[in-house]
Length: 85
Image 1: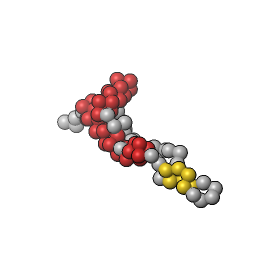
Image 2: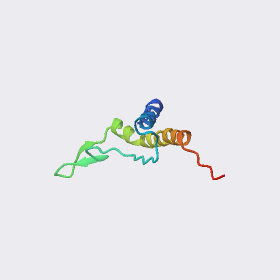
Image 3: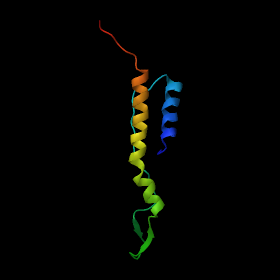
Image 4: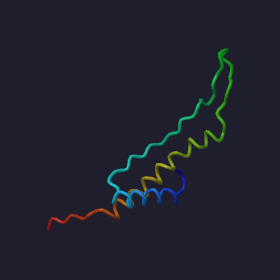
Protein backbone atom coordinates (compact mmCIF):
# COMPACT_ATOMS: atom_id res chain seq x y z
CA UNK A 1 0.00 0.00 0.00
CA UNK A 2 1.47 3.30 -1.02
CA UNK A 3 -1.57 5.52 -0.64
CA UNK A 4 -1.63 7.55 2.60
CA UNK A 5 -5.41 7.66 2.77
CA UNK A 6 -5.72 3.89 2.32
CA UNK A 7 -3.17 3.26 5.09
CA UNK A 8 -5.15 5.51 7.40
CA UNK A 9 -8.37 3.68 6.52
CA UNK A 10 -6.68 0.36 7.26
CA UNK A 11 -5.57 1.57 10.69
CA UNK A 12 -9.02 3.02 11.42
CA UNK A 13 -10.64 -0.26 10.42
CA UNK A 14 -8.40 -2.19 12.83
CA UNK A 15 -9.31 0.17 15.67
CA UNK A 16 -13.03 -0.08 14.90
CA UNK A 17 -12.99 -3.86 14.43
CA UNK A 18 -10.71 -4.83 17.32
CA UNK A 19 -10.84 -1.83 19.66
CA UNK A 20 -7.25 -0.79 19.11
CA UNK A 21 -3.89 -1.75 17.70
CA UNK A 22 -1.35 -3.45 19.94
CA UNK A 23 1.27 -4.50 17.41
CA UNK A 24 2.35 -3.58 13.90
CA UNK A 25 4.35 -6.14 11.92
CA UNK A 26 4.77 -4.69 8.43
CA UNK A 27 6.43 -6.78 5.78
CA UNK A 28 7.64 -5.46 2.46
CA UNK A 29 7.93 -7.66 -0.53
CA UNK A 30 6.40 -8.72 -3.76
CA UNK A 31 6.91 -12.08 -5.36
CA UNK A 32 7.10 -11.96 -9.13
CA UNK A 33 7.48 -14.86 -11.49
CA UNK A 34 10.94 -14.09 -12.68
CA UNK A 35 14.13 -12.31 -11.81
CA UNK A 36 15.71 -9.29 -13.39
CA UNK A 37 16.49 -11.64 -16.25
CA UNK A 38 15.65 -15.32 -16.69
CA UNK A 39 17.27 -17.74 -19.06
CA UNK A 40 15.91 -20.55 -21.17
CA UNK A 41 17.26 -24.11 -21.38
CA UNK A 42 20.02 -22.95 -23.74
CA UNK A 43 21.21 -20.27 -21.32
CA UNK A 44 19.91 -17.35 -23.34
CA UNK A 45 17.87 -14.54 -21.89
CA UNK A 46 14.24 -15.50 -22.28
CA UNK A 47 12.60 -12.88 -20.10
CA UNK A 48 13.41 -9.52 -18.54
CA UNK A 49 11.68 -7.93 -15.57
CA UNK A 50 9.53 -5.07 -16.78
CA UNK A 51 9.97 -1.54 -15.50
CA UNK A 52 6.46 -1.70 -13.99
CA UNK A 53 7.41 -4.84 -12.04
CA UNK A 54 10.57 -3.19 -10.72
CA UNK A 55 8.75 -0.02 -9.73
CA UNK A 56 6.14 -1.99 -7.78
CA UNK A 57 8.97 -3.65 -5.84
CA UNK A 58 10.94 -0.47 -5.13
CA UNK A 59 7.88 1.28 -3.67
CA UNK A 60 7.37 -1.30 -0.91
CA UNK A 61 9.38 0.62 1.76
CA UNK A 62 6.88 3.46 1.29
CA UNK A 63 4.06 1.08 2.19
CA UNK A 64 5.88 -0.06 5.32
CA UNK A 65 6.52 3.53 6.40
CA UNK A 66 2.92 4.62 5.84
CA UNK A 67 1.42 1.57 7.55
CA UNK A 68 3.63 1.93 10.62
CA UNK A 69 3.10 5.68 10.81
CA UNK A 70 -0.69 5.43 10.66
CA UNK A 71 -0.90 2.49 13.06
CA UNK A 72 1.44 4.07 15.61
CA UNK A 73 -0.61 7.26 15.57
CA UNK A 74 -3.73 5.27 16.45
CA UNK A 75 -1.84 3.18 19.02
CA UNK A 76 -0.80 6.35 20.82
CA UNK A 77 -4.15 8.09 20.50
CA UNK A 78 -6.18 5.08 21.75
CA UNK A 79 -3.78 3.86 24.43
CA UNK A 80 -5.10 3.39 27.94
CA UNK A 81 -3.14 5.63 30.25
CA UNK A 82 -1.97 3.99 33.45
CA UNK A 83 -1.33 6.11 36.49
CA UNK A 84 0.66 4.81 39.45
CA UNK A 85 -0.01 7.86 41.62
